[in-house]
Image 1: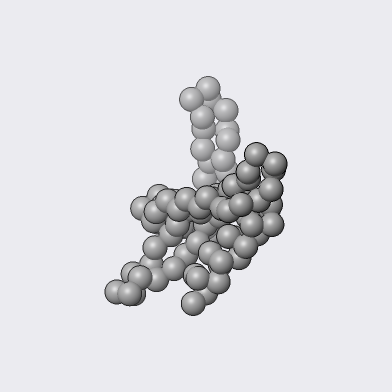
Image 2 (image 1 turned 45 degrees about the vertical axis):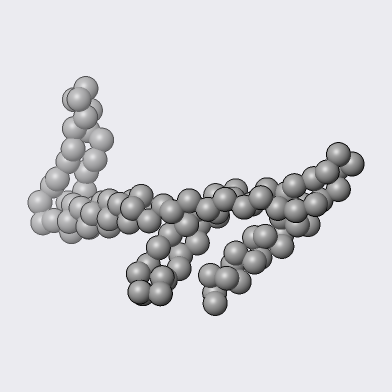
Length: 104
């Protein structure tokens, strides 16, 4: 229901001339699987520039979204490890510059 309302809102806005780019929607399939769609809605106009419809495109970005969330989670865990360590921890880039450190 929430998914349908979100899609309807995107389409209604496009019918008023307010186009939507890269709107991410989360929804559950009938088998209760979480999926993510990237939605774009573009207003269709006639030769007189009157709105006559909407072109909507949705792309399944579930794998990319899940990967990005996993990477962000690992980065948070590593940051917490560095910040709570009982010893100084620092990182050095390929030029020998310190680019990461904790407050110990």
